Image (tube, rainbow, N blue to C red; front, top):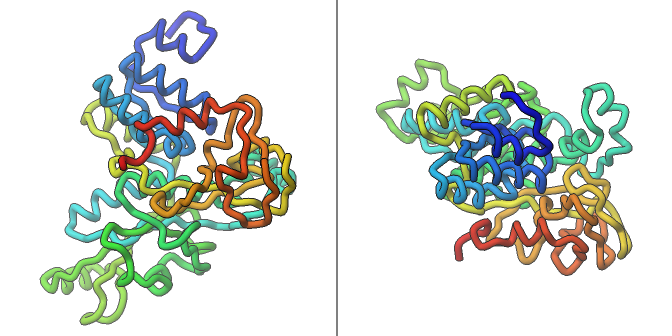
Length: 351
């Protein structure tokens, strides 16, 4: 590729692009880049989970109209889980839980409090804050939920503390789960950086074979129908070529919001804040943290992503208290461009 361009949009105007990989963690700019790529008939791979969640339904529709594909990435936790789920279902198991493993969680962390830790890890403090306060965890699992129809059992998921991944079979009440399956996580379990899936098989024919292959399960030979599958790592950018190959050569998305907007990540107050507080950052914020929830039960809650404005920042119009769910009446948007885009009919759940 040669020739200088002054904007990302200019790349697609001057060059033929087969696949565009969006790997920023912006939302508003990333959306415009993805729109330009799709309109130029390039496939889009989203390493950016934030724009994936906020505008996945719209981008998937736009891609279909242009005869190209939009897919989530293969290397972050939700992409790795998608690959596992495809294989586990192929083996005849019913997926009852898709799980992440979170090393540390502090919903009230701020970018300033994490400045030292961020420097050690070569991270932007705001990015580090989004990881620490659980917002990124919720975003990843909501992207997965919107692909397969999985939901959390409660806002923010259960997230029990565990020492090892095998304890997933002890801490959750799988029999009470909805038939669609759920998303959840373990806190502090080994292997750090891993993911897991719990599958169900009631096949009497398969049980002796699964026992022979030492697959970890609940209960004894007669009672246990739930089996644990896990992967001890995810390799992020090193796995991205897999999904590039998949969209180009196989003509399939690895992961997309096929079920629509089933889950969303909503904003909650990190502390007591007066009216007039400006929300400078939304994901990795000093003011709000994000928790996954069911769209059907949202009751006017504000999606965390729509507070991530690049123009004039949103402001709290009313005082809020710590852990309060932020609703639309609590916020004033001087710049509504991102909010209005989110509220487009093609980006919202079908009624």
